[in-house]
Each structure stands twice: as C-alpha cells, then as structure tokens.
Image (cartoon, rainbow, N blue to C red; front, side, top):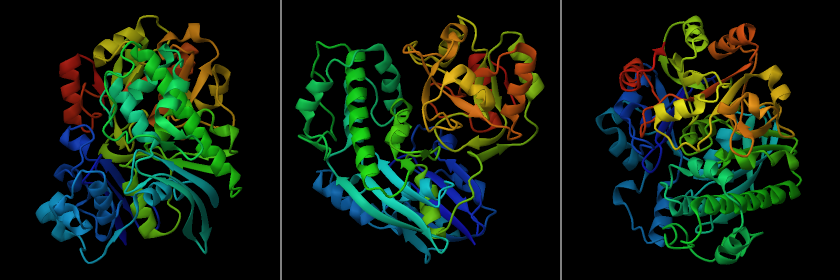
Length: 494
C-alpha cells in the first residue's frame, strides 16, 4: 500500500509518498517544478514523478472546514471551493485526480501533521513535541505528548494557543516592517539581526504583548504593523529586537513543555523551527533534539502520510526528490575548487526542505577573504547575508562550538560559534556564528568530496549555499542547471 500525503491549496505545496514498509519513496516541492517560490498549488510536473506508483490512500495536511471557519472569523471570508479536502484536490489536480482513490481520503489537523512529520521520522519511542508556526486552522502553538502504543503513534495535546496570538505572525509582521517579504524572507531578517542591537525588546513587549507566559498579543498582527512604526529606528535594530523577543517567547514555550515532564526528548516542528539562531538554546531544556529538515507546511505532506500510516517512518536522509542520475561528480568539483573557482553541483536526488545539503549546492573554498562577496554577487543577494559551512562531522567540534545537546547538525538547523573566524571568513556571520552542516560517514557524494578536499588542503569544510536563480526555488533538474550556468557563467556538474 502506498500512501500519498499532500500539502496544497494555501501555502508551499508538496507531496510525499510512503510505502507499506514505512519507507519514504518520494517527497518533493511544487515550487521546484513551477519555479514559483512557495507555490501553493500542485504542479503537474511534480505529480508526474509518482505516476508509476500505485496510490491506495490519500492524506491531506489540514481540516478544510475548520480552516475556513478561522478565515471567516479573521475577515478573510470563505473560499467556497475549499470547504472539503476533495474539493481542494479536484481543483488542484484536475482530471488526474481520477487516478487516486477518492473514496479513501483522510484529513488531519494542521498542527498534528507537523507533530507527526517530526515524531514519526525521529528515533524516539517517546517525546515531547512542540509546534510553533504562524497559523494552522486555529492553533498557532501546540505541545504534545507523543509515544508509540503497540507500534502506533499516539498524540495527546497538552497545551495550545490559538489565533490570533501567534509568534510566527509577529515575526512575519516584523519581517515586513524591515522591508522584506513576509512568509518568504523571514530567514533574511534572522541574518539582519546580527548587525543590530536588541535595544527595543522591552518596548516591543509592552507594545504587542498582554501576557508573555500565555503568548497573548494585544492586537492581531495577521495584517502586519504600520510601516511607520518606529520609523526613526534602523532596520537592523528592529530585526535584532524582533529576533530577541521571538527567542524569549519560543523559550517560554520550551519551559512550559519541559514542565509537563513527559520526556527529555524534544521534537520541534513548524515554520518557526527554521530559526537556527534560537535553536542553539533548545539544549537548555531537553537532552535530545530532533527537527525534521522540512518543519514547515511542505513537510506536513509527510506528516499527513505518516498519520495515515500510523507507525514509525524510516528516515535516512533528506535526499527524497527529483533524481539526476549518475555518480556524484567529486573529481570535477574538486578540480574547480582547487583552481579557486566557485562551482555548482546538481546530482542525485533533490533535497526535501528549504536548505541545500550538497545535491543542489553552490560550493566554494571558505578561506578566501573575497569568496563571500563573490558568491553574494553571483546570487545577487544582500552582502550582509551569511553562508553555511559543510564540514566532516567528526571534526566539527574542532572548528565550531556546537551548542549543548546537539549531537550533530546534519541539516543546518543550529548555529555555533566559529573557533577560528579569521581563517574562514566566508562562512562566519557578523556575530561570529555559523549555520553548520555536519556530514557523517554515510557514503554520500558530499562526504567523499569533503574527504578528498581535506586530504589535499587540510581544510575539512566548504562553503555551501543553495543553487538557485534569484527569486526562484532551488535548481531541480538538469535543464534548471543549464539555465543557471548560462545566466551566472558558473559550471554546474551532474
């Protein structure tokens, strides 16, 4: 039995397929096919990736009528074509929906799908699950007690906060305030924060919060805030203060979750879990931490499928999308790097999640003073934005202070202080931190490349950033790679 999980219709469409063994056969993002960032609609190119699979069950990541009730409450009105899961899927898939068993469709709550995508891909038998995002149907924060009972994942909701009281909506509102695009460029504001001073955290608390412990806001921030608010304050200081307050709020949720005394294992999901600066402090509250590498809405396609399946999902890595077949071009990349070139790689299966992990990456030597500016120029990004190091896992602690209770950082989910920032200027942010990707001895192509690079240079790491054209999602197939080569004059090996 193959189960198709779907996240679509509202934000960041994606699909996941699980077989009856609990193996993930495929997981991919619609945006990689349509070339529209955060595309809310399913793309036929994405669906054609699974036409050869016998889908016997469909699972959807939300309860549509419940979401519509919240939209009605918030003044957004009702979308009459989105009242049921079947309506949404017929509108999304069209004629191709007939190939799926429309009599065997399950719908699960938004936050429960986040929880399941995390817990059922973790190694834990029992865990405290925390979900923090902008908004699901009504929930904006939820804490769950998760465990396996006779092999089936069981979830008990311990606490929740509902719309409009939302950490995610606050962060998005502040993202818009500093001139960035909400629901897309929050990660850029996180980078901006290092350049500012959190001098307005207390002011933000008094302005926006009525109860910090309950996470209650004085006003609905769904529509943002006035752009003239604190117009005399620089954007970097606004970003730093917003980041600081968000950290306070997230950690208050973690303290509450810890106080339930359910488990010392933490599963953390929802879009806010992508804030790797905050994640460095999670180890203060929990001994073991798992964040599935796609914790936002797209990852909930896997969560929906996991709930329909019921048991543990066999998670091995995030390389679950479109396949560009062939051996990883280790020697070709190495030759370019040794010639001080910036080089692209599009090889193997695409990453499921927002971060490039070596299969759709732009790579460079992290040691040169000019490298960071060169890569930013190629990608046409703001110069303040940092790049990540990808490093041999067994050597990571020699170069970075990895935060407590993070045994590794295989999916760029946490920042740590670089021990020798002057030696690696291309991957160190303004505050001395780096968003680390550690690579274990897993036989992957990026692992082999790092090993050979280390032997030749004595440097165990490379600069790693996503391979994408400005304004578009990551490169998906060879055609995309050819476009990248033509536009940026950077060789992309497959």
